[in-house]
Length: 219
Image (cartoon, rainbow, N blue to C red; front, side, top):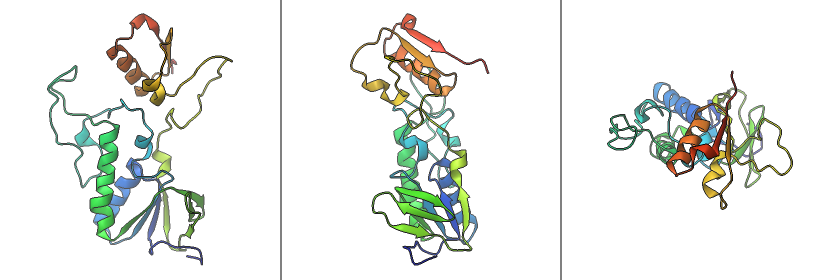
């Protein structure tokens, strides 16, 4: 490292403390005697889950998600609702709390993982704190692993991938629970899980199905 501020001697610099980055650090430190520096521009671990819409849940059973060393959830079976009889699916708050617990109770206490939150990766093994301005530089033998490649793009942090006419109100999904006036119509754009969740959420809150227009691409 250079004369700039420096983290502990790290064998791996992992960029992104989302699902992939945390899982990689967990597996690596359990199977190899190495030190890992985790860097993320967000204020805590969890990646896109920190920005997700409040009614999102996993697309699969909680037990199949997370890091290899720690089970997410209790493995319970849902007793009520349309998914009664199926395994629990964690929501955003539970997933974020899970990753924070993995970091606080396992990775950092191991003495071989350090977490640099609110830091921007600059390239070439260097990163800077978005709060203090302190800069860090990885050593020449440090391996750089960019876990951001596996991170999804979500509406909360990306612009709409389509044109918007003047006077048309477009909201990312996470703002939907905060709307103060009743729209004449809800137009949901997209054909993935987020769009499906949104339609189901609106119907569950009493919105007339005739007031929902779902625009889905064919591909």
